Length: 330
Ligand code: NDP
Image (cartoon, rainbow, N blue to C red; front, top):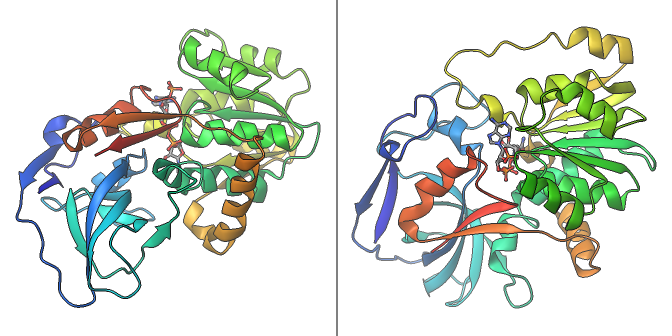
């Protein structure tokens, strides 16, 4: 039974040496407990924040303790009346091949008609983030223009498609030509920009958004977001969902001053944390599942295989190696 521990707090970009793979005894379950075998592990950019000891909205991981993230697991043995052998559950679990639980915080998932990994992506945390961030803060109206950064990732690819369903013009920003092509051909974006090959992002956004930007869904922060600010319309709404471009910075990054842009445009900029909207999760999942069934929404994922590959898959998020949701199949 393998476990992955946080070995060091990463300085800058995470390294494999920041993680330790250890072997442990298989756990024995007591009354009220279940034995779980991990089948899919979600790796997410926000875990980088938990690897540092800076104050944040979730407590930091402890050194030399297992890392945890969204996991799908199979119930192998059960001494708990709420779970049967063969059930699949989703929840925040530890990076272990086998672990026991008393069932708290676990949700049974139906894997007969929906692939397990979808519960970590489009019907899980990232799908909820896309839907709730966009609808609760962005409030896109038909005919408006929306720009999404990190557009080819788990959250961004769903944001763009939802905005299309709601009748918007959608422009995505991503890091490779292949991703740009995918956004347009597979996900129906109206335009997409490769920030790595574009010399003047402000001009490129202006060209892709002839009527300006009404809603900006920000997954990356930094210079890309500065360029969007120059293009916002009056009453623009900006959902600050993530800032992956600065997660590995070791000093506070320099940025332009946002206040004049907000004042001049009577614009709204609001930070978003999906867990603040927990009461809306059932309604949001229902809507996402309906769109999936109707074929209005689709998703892609990058599936890495092997328990020992979890740290590398996590590191690869910062290299843009994923398209859609990055998951590890065990
Ligand atoms: P993604 O699937 O989008 O994976 C990360 C992507 O970020 C990479 O594929 C890469 O794509 C891009 N990226 C990496 N480094 C940079 C950089 N320096 N500049 C610009 N882009 C970069 O991850 P998620 O969809 O899971 O998460 C997206 C964002 O949303 C993250 O910032 C995350 O922290 C945040 N988030 C916030 C939540 C909340 O509740 N607030 C919940 C879930 C996610 P590319 O090739 O295009 O560079």
